[in-house]
Structures are given as C-alpha cells and as structure tokens.
Amino acid sequence: MTNGANRGGELISILVTAGEKAVRDFNKLSEGEWFDESPEYFLTTYAASALKSIDKTSALLEVSVDRTRQEAGAIRRGRPAEDERRNGRFDIVTYWANGNPRGAIEIKSPIWSAVKNLLHPDFTELCKALVANSTSTLQFGAFLFYASVSNPKKKYDNAIQSLRELIERVHEEAKLVSQKNGAGCVLFPFSAHRGKNEDDGAWCISCIVFTRKGGEKSFK
Image (tube, rainbow, N blue to C red):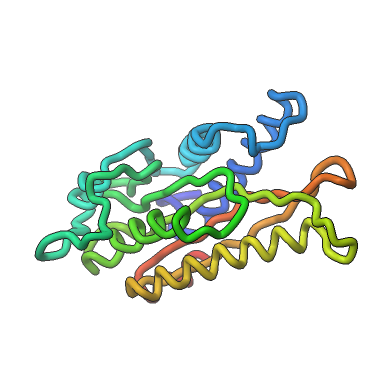
C-alpha cells in the first residue's frame, strides 16, 4: 500500500480488521469473556497501532479537537456553534505524509442500542470538523465501534438479524446528523459473528464514515 492509502476505504478496512483482532485477542486473554467486558481503550489502541501498516501514515491518540482543526485548517468564521465540542479530544487522529490531519476517529465500545445521547455528540463533532472549511486537509471522520446483541427470546428471530437491525438503526442516526450538518455518511461493510454456543448472541466491529459531500465514493 503506497501514498498513505489513496483510497480511504483501504484505511477503514484496516481499522475494522484491527478491531476484530482486538475482540479475538481479548477473548483469548480473558479465557472466553465477551468483548463487552473490555475497556474501550483496548479497541482504541489496536485501531491506532494498525495504522502504522499504511505507508506514509502516522497517528496520535487523544488529540485536542481544537488543535486538530487548527492544524487542518478546519476553522469557520465566527464563534463556535453551541454543539461544537472544541475543547474535547478525538480518540485518534491520523495524518497525511506531510503531517497534516487526514482523519479524526472516535471509538465506541460496547454499543447495545442506538441511543441518541450516546451517538449524536460524536457524530456531530466529526461532522462539524469536516464541514467547517472546504479547503481543510481533513478527508474523513470515522466512528469505529463494537456492537453486540443477546440471543433473541422469540424463536423466529435470530442474533444475526438483531445485530444487523441494530447497526442499521445506528446508521440511520448517523444519517440524520450528517444531513443536518451538510456532510456525507457511509456505513462501511462489516461481518456479523455468532458466539461459540447456540444460546450466545452476536457481535461485530463496524464503522460509519463521515465525509464532505461527494467524498463518499472513496469509502465504498
């Protein structure tokens, strides 16, 4: 892979793969515990470490939102909007070969339901940074997350179906926020996994990618 992964989809695919490795490694480390019991930073460190496999790409953890936006030129005129968390931090920021910010990444684990109060602050923060200035160096904002569901009580339902419905609800919330802020939104392809036993639920690592309008094609 060269030139810092020209197509953003390659970068997101690496993040999702790293997340799945984190789940399996934690399962071995804990002798069978579900990833729901893992601290969120376990997923964060796996995702950040995986970015080193991309040529001419670097990353930092817990980077100031304001610093990132200043360095990327993602600043709009006037006072910040009330829902802009400029004093917060992005979980991961990845950079172009020239050192300018390329993407902001937020990590969420675990997700069991599509609760607006849980999702919208991160979605909004990522969208605001992207649309602040059309000439900024930011190419994308990524919401990388681990989601799981229990085995449904109704016999005609199944865990994989329930998981896919949960991911779609999360995606619908992301689309609402992106449309409100004039950004694009893509649900990156994901794989759903069952637990080891029949009565277990299902889990996945998934990623929603926010872009400026027209940038979605690089992440499909």
